[in-house]
Amino acid sequence: MRISWLEISERIKYELQQLEEEGNNISELRSEWQQIEDAKNSVDEFRNKAKAFYQKIENIFSSNKNFENEPSSWNEIVRQCHIKTDTIPSFAHSFIEDRILGGWLGRSAGCLLGKPVEKTTRSGIRELLLSNGTWPISDYITERGIPNSLLQKYPWNKHNGKESLKENIVCMTEDDDMNYPMINLFVYERYGRNFTTENIIHTWMEMIPVLSTFTAERVAYLNTLNGILPPATATIRNPYREWIGAQIRADIWGWISPAQSAQASEFAWRDARLSHIGNGIYGEIFFASAIAASFKFNDLRKIINEALSFIPPRSKFYEAIHYVLSIPIHELSWDETVNSLYQKFGTYHWVHTINNAALVVAALLSSKGNYESAICNVVMGGWDTDSNGATVGSIMGTMLGAKNLPSKWIAPLKNKIRSSLKGFDNCLISDLAKRTVILSKYSD
View 1 (spheres, rainbow, N blue to C red):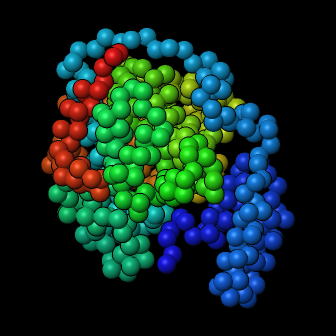
View 2 (view 1 turned 45 degrees about the horizontal axis):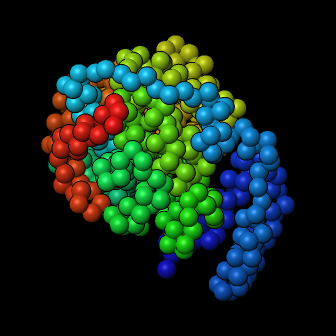
């Protein structure tokens, strides 16, 4: 039986790419692996050779310079970024309620918008929606008017994609991008501010079916079942250690840390180190910080700059966000902006942290504070459409508050969310927000 993201040849393929991205010269290894793949061996012979090859490559480490520039330890991140303790803010309770509800609703709607076309290329999304006159995107995606030939060429996401089409929406459908805010909510409710990475993985095993996890999370889950403890869960045969998985787990840490970006960052680090290193960790730190900053600023560039201050300044993640900030986005069409991102970051896998984070930041900056423009632009940009729609929606929703979100996007959710998590299916979004508000104490 083949289990996606765990099959050995799949992991070797992405391990070689990851090692290359970390600065290693792997041309000889690529040739050796190609010879193994091309050999006419039996299934058992191939697996034995693959296992031996993986043992050979799994002890290859990046240069010391790379790890110095992209540390995974919290103490080193604090040192490089000069992180200081937060100043405790003062907000009215009604303000916090509105902003946190806005975050939950905004994340849900953005995720739902991108869900049908997850895994579809940017050009494929455009081709689909041009065919029924709904490009550029300005509403939830519909299949009405799309020729059957295109629906066969670009099938909707098999994970509830069809249920996320405009004509079929009855709630926020089940999605890993929404499962993680819920499970992190539960972790904090159960363990409080002293929660550990071990508390998180224990909760995963209690509450998340393993096939509801993907890429790095699935490997970390398997590693834990094999007796491996964090942070080794993130590094043992985990070629997805800088992919987007941690980035989509950031939200709750920002929501419970209004205007406290340092706290949000440290909570995010505890979570991310379970499954990620380096740039993968930075994705979660960055967006947790951005969400925390969204309680304080109504200027998206200020939010992004504050979040960037928590990222090691010589890392590839920092350089990517700095590049986006340098683009004259308001002087370009959205297509021109996205073209530049694909030219710069197009070699990364479509669910890598760096390219998707860059696209999210560009969509936020392009929006001029308009929720609809932000989520539509990011989904039209392709790559990980539902994750990016969710993250953009979360930041915009937190910044604007629930009262300022357009009913066009929020009403179809009917305040209900599905989940594969034990105890969370058919929750009311407003109840999740209320539980989050309780945790958003400025100190305890």
